[in-house]
Image (tube, rainbow, N blue to C red; front, side, top):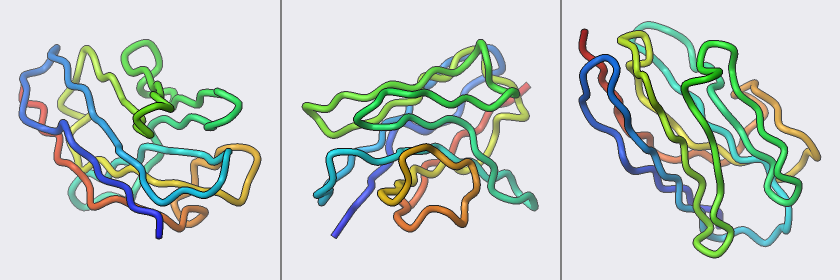
Length: 125
């Protein structure tokens, strides 16, 4: 049973930084895509950043290029999202998701079977 647990959310002022973590357990595959999605109130879930475990390919949404970075620690089975220069529009619930079926990362939420419970990020102006 794959389990994903997010942490690191919080409230910051615009321009601040946060680091989100996604701890994964139960993986029996050597490769998978791990992706961060976010959902603002009254909006759909959108892809933010992803990393292909096993190959290291990184995906970043245009809206976060130059501000966010994604990384992994294989020894800890943990993925990180470093968020700098945060903006109010970055506010939302951030979810970690995993896909073990593809050899690339999709940014479409319905392509992911495994999800964490989410961690809230609030950026005030």
